[in-house]
Length: 114
Image (cartoon, rainbow, N blue to C red; front, side, top):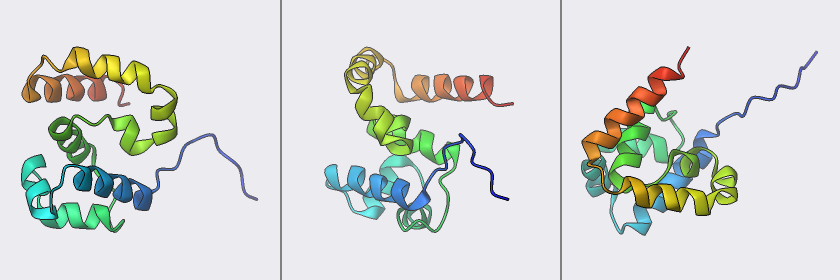
């Protein structure tokens, strides 16, 4: 018997495609983008191909380096629905350094991890 759940299943192929779009929008090849995000080229390649699930740590690195929201990568429909609010938040967060944002994001993730 199959039970339907309300949990959103993350599609690693779609996540990989969104990361490819981000990379190409920045006009970077895989090597340059991986270096820019402080991840290995192999990790990036496997994520883009949908071979591996992206880890929280790698997501933080990609989002921090590119300024792209986690929602855009994980749930683009939610991002589109709230795009104006995200843009306002992004503008207000732009005054913080990459390290400050990364530390804040880790604190938030830790606070909601059970």
